[in-house]
Image (cartoon, rainbow, N blue to C red; front, side, top):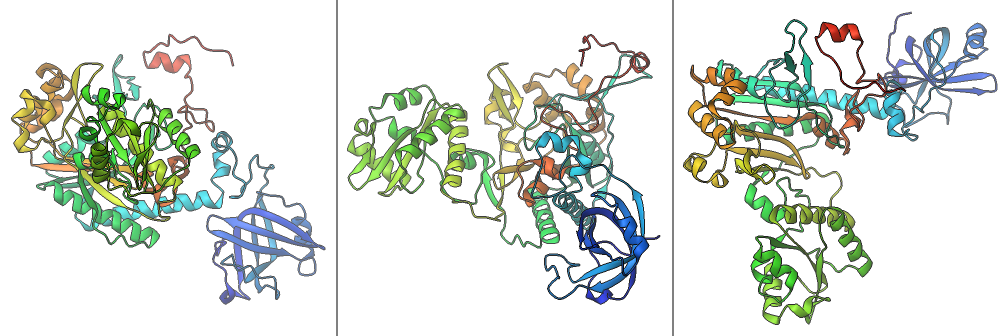
Length: 588
């Protein structure tokens, strides 16, 4: 038999046609001798009828059908009886009376349900991923992923970009995370690295005159896992020559609008908001702000340091900050205690608070704030009676991190986040460097190939903390989707940046010699972005866990329970690769 239709296609217009369908037995029901089978393929479900009065021989074979048997049937499309239609199915008006049946393969009882209403535990889903992927929701997720990738390609192709593949076996270079490495058989003792991103190669493509490049690229990083992170992930990677940051941002904004319209039929009409890094930190406490709701933050360090409250005065005198959020409503003591515990779980020593009343501020610490300080606080926060002021005091980085989390938690508890809302924004003008207290050295805030702003070049050696770069991140609903920058195209500036982070000329040449060599032959100004594709698709579908939109993800231990990777290799392979293991093999 040769398939003529998929299991979502048949409607009333097909009545009396002879058709051939193939798929999996989703359910089997025996109603007084007449057997009904819901036949499922990737596209949907069609009801098949095995009626002994219509075909006795085929009915006898159908009595042996079980869930997940793979079958082919041929039959005639008939209209369902009055009252037996199923409006939830595209094919709900019709059924197929089977005249031929072929059992392609039999199946054991599946260890997990192929039912979106009965989702198994994560570890079991990972073990039997090939069954979990049969669920309609998972098939929908991968279909949306496919459509999003297609829309991205369609958009870039229409803007004169070339899709170019970059290598997967590359030289190990320091890019922030640990490399996955691959031993070379033909070069004993040498190793390839798997790319954390195509960064260096796409810059070389610009030096090569490719002008506009994109790739839906696989990136591999050996780092601790969480819901939005996997050892291998996919990003939409792009690079442009002879452009500035605004051109890149406009193009990427257009791409997201095209993807949402094409895949979800959602018009993102608003221009993406733009915040400087400083503004984002001041107003939201984070460089990836969720702007679907208000609850903006107020720094009150200069005000509360005039009070007699010792905790605030000590923090302020030691270089810390005090930030405040006003949820614009009062909360019960139990709710406040829960939020204090929430802040402590994220590293805070506590959370101070005061109620706003008609008479002023009230709480067990209000007595330390005289009338003038209270008035300044109310003026700065614009707090109204019947609301609450909540304070976090700590070193700037820690205080911002905790109060930004508190802001989002308040929005969730107070139901301030609108459903099915997508709010994009840009965060620009990041510092090029950040100081690492552990190593007492400067490190790149993003990466070392980002171009400093011209007016900041004079500070490279004198005061790296003042160097702002042409860096730009795109954020959706509080999640960073991608990061980009204008790249350094002058080798002299690149060497100066490398020197700030402690790379000597010799080390720079050893690690990045091929890039520095390429620069010697004329490089255009260029910039680009790496945009998280898994995160984008997950958010379009309402997930926080990117594993829901990846066909074969790893678990939280970076393992695949399905295929057993990572696994040991035998001694023959080890010998061929000229490597030895010093790990004692554990008995299982």
